[in-house]
Image (cartoon, rainbow, N blue to C red; front, side, top):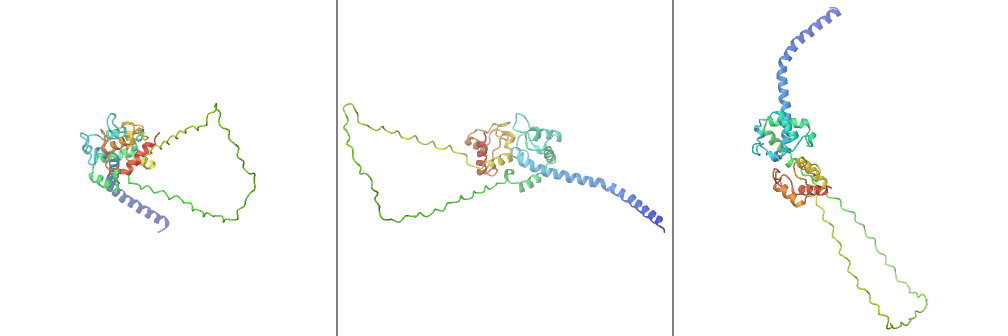
Length: 281
C-alpha cells in the first residue's frame, strides 16, 4: 500500500467517525443546553437571594410577604416590570430606586439576578445566604486601638554644689523721704481688677468612627432613601439633625422606615453612623 492509499484510508476513517459522532452530539445537545441554562439560572438566583437579603428584607421580610399587598413570593409582575420597579422605585412610597442609573447601588445585571430570584423564589437560598452573610449584610469591623503615645524619659536634675559665698561691692542704697500729700492731692488707690471671664468649654463632638459610619450607612441602604450625603430624597434629610432624634428613628422606625435592632445594627455602629452624619457639612 503506497502513501496515497494510506492517506485515502485515513481520510475515509475520519469521515466515518465524524458521521457517527456528529449525530450523537446533536442528540445530546438539547439536554446539555438545558442543564447549562438550569445551572446559570440557579447561580443567578443564588446571588439574587443575597441582594434581596441585603437590600430588600428589611422592609419586605425574609419571606417576602411582610408588607400588606406586596407579597413578592407570589408576584404577578413579569421580569421587565419587576426590573423597572427595582431600578426606578415607586415615587410617593417607601420604595427607593436601586438602579445605579437612578442613584441607587445595583448595576443592571445585579437587578436581573434579583428579578430571577423573585420569579423563582426558593426560601432555602435565603437561609443559605443568611448563614454566610453577617447581620444587616455588614460584618462588625473592630476599630483598632491607637498605639500608645511615646512618653518622654525625664532627665535627671543636676543640683549644683554649694560654694563659698561672694559679695559684690556696690553703692549703698539710700532712702529718699516721701513728701506728704498736699490738700489738693488725693492718695492713690489701686483700681479694682475685674475677674477674667470663664473659658467657654469646647463643644462636644460625636463619638464614633466617621469612616466606619460611612461604610455602615452605605451597606444598610440608607443612601437609597436619605441620600449618599444625608441630603434627603424619598426619606427626610439627616444632615444637621440632632443625634437623639436620629437614634430614636433608627431604633424604633418611623413611617415606612423599618426599625434596626441591636442584632442588625450594633450600638457601636449606630454611634459610627451618628459621627458620620455629624461630619457632613
